[in-house]
Length: 173
Image (cartoon, rainbow, N blue to C red):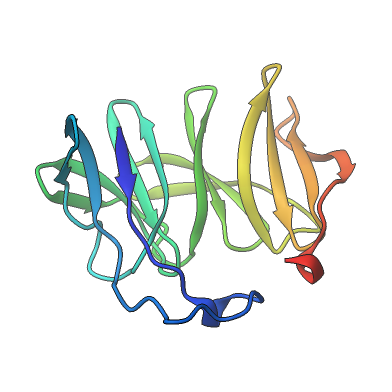
């Protein structure tokens, strides 16, 4: 069991400020090593104050920070190696049909091709941020912001609006 740390930054949200503000930086990753004990696995990269996503893929642990670009793979101990996406922020990582996918800040979805290479697999046309992914009955679904559309990955490699407009949008955040 792994845990990525972070801290809430109210200046980046439409929610009201929290008092007192949290000034403790996040970013390290921990592994549950025995009852009531967590072991520090280090910090992915040099920047970032909060891990937004962790995923296991082909025996490796992959992580991305909330507000900084780049994806990293854990190499043991406290060592992390960058694996690309250095020009885009990642919102979420998911594994689907043995492929590691990056839901980017924007409307793009990328597939990991190894080393530091990522290939664009499609764009969700009414999304500015692709948040979460879930597999349901063998299909991959992705949620989006700001309108709350849910998209389904189709067999032809495209994305289709799948479930209508389910979300509440940013006005009700």
